[in-house]
Image (cartoon, rainbow, N blue to C red; front, side, top):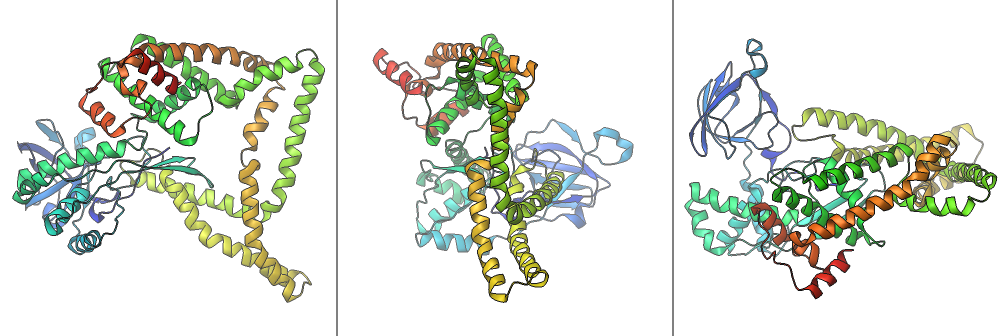
Length: 522
């Protein structure tokens, strides 16, 4: 799942050319840094308004003044130690770091068009992170969205609602992936801060940063953000173990977000260290998840293992024969279903996978913020297929015309039917063929005695883990306030409380309302 995004401001996109040399920073005032370079060419490479970005940093430093090839002044909200040496000379060893140059792009025309659209009652979609990524949390937001909102208020007196839209993906790097789109509560510019914005300088930075904080809170209210990917996987497994019934997609999203925010609050309450009881429970959840992965089964399939074992325990021969029957049946269905679609979709699918993986590696190498680069995979697949799919159909048409004795009408009919057959093949694959491995592998694993023993033990492990997890949630739930008790959570308020390290309104409700809230969560 992913809340990643692409930037709307040219100078903040995830890419920049390398700058020659390195530099050292000496803080002269809170938001002003002096950069001293070694073997650099600041005078020729940089100008006022350009930005430099250090390795591993998503934020960039804006150039205020270029004094020479080795000296410049920048603005930044980043925290640096008293002295940071950045030098790319080989003689300096590991102390050296290069930097990226992000050239300034005049956005006056773009901003003018945007303000005209907003003044006429239109809507503008903007990705304020400024770059595509596959992280489990937001990148620092760019100031452009705040400038647009304040400019609209200043120029036209329009209180523009800034509505957060959460794009939560499932298997986003594969064809026919799914996404949940959520709309949160809008954020508005405080009219009383307009004079501070007009004053410019530190006052403008302060009100813009304050607005960005509120926008970021609203964005977090419509996505599931975690410290890292391992924490995200842990939260998904914990949510599946905890729930007592099958939820809709929106209910699953709500429960997952409760666990994610509860995990963050638990870390805050324990001073950044995991409580011992949760650390033990977390290790057990991770081991259970790893066992499922090694055996090739899903959590929902574990609940079926007990039923199947009890049903065929009296007749071992029947149970073994049924396993072989399931394997043969799945293979036959797979072959029959795959034949029509294989000729039309398989060649393009394989080539698209190879092409997108190559583009993914290239994007990952060029990025400072990507983890695996999966955020570009589906886009590259779509772009490739736009060209490759019609080309494949035309190739088949030429082959039919040149290598067979079919008349022209028959060839045209065959080619014109290819889009429909291709789409039917995709839909059929989505209905059951695409995930055949997750159904077939458990049966194959049962042919091995050691795997059978491990699978037979899983239901008991799951029941014990589920019981202990629910008991732990019941114990710490009251400390989570609205996350535990409320049926409808004000997610924007929750995110603000988490950011501030507080739990406003955390007093437990009455036993009646507590029971009702607990029942809802369970």
